[in-house]
Amino acid sequence: MTHKHNPDEIHQLATDTIRHLNSGQVIVHLDNVVKELVENALDAKATSIEVKLVENGLTSLSVKDNGVGIRADDRPNMAKRYHTSKLLCFEDLIRVTSYGFR
Image 1: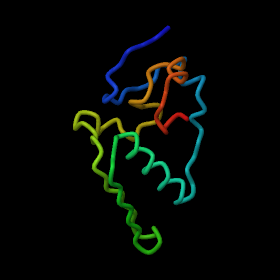
Image 2 (image 1 turned 90 degrees about the horizontal axis):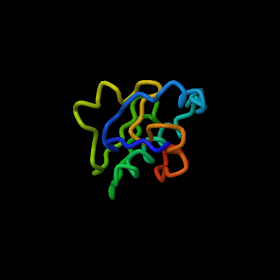
Image 3 (image 1 turned 180 degrees about the vertical axis):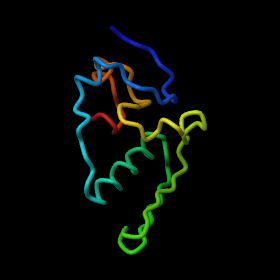
């Protein structure tokens, strides 16, 4: 079954989709954090990405890009577990071209 959704909208995945995905991934190294943030920028069509680390990332890390950005309405959901704008159901993984689910 194919589901359509607004690709700009962050939403919670359905329970059956959550069961199929390995959402137990934990990012424990700074290089993984930077990689994930750069991939998010690329998925947002950024052509310029600036990464800044203060004290090798111990004090702060920032990523600035010129991608399409996140809608204000989606900000409350952007860091919640099982929330994404990249797919709606497990079957969508067949067609995903973003870095987020490769």
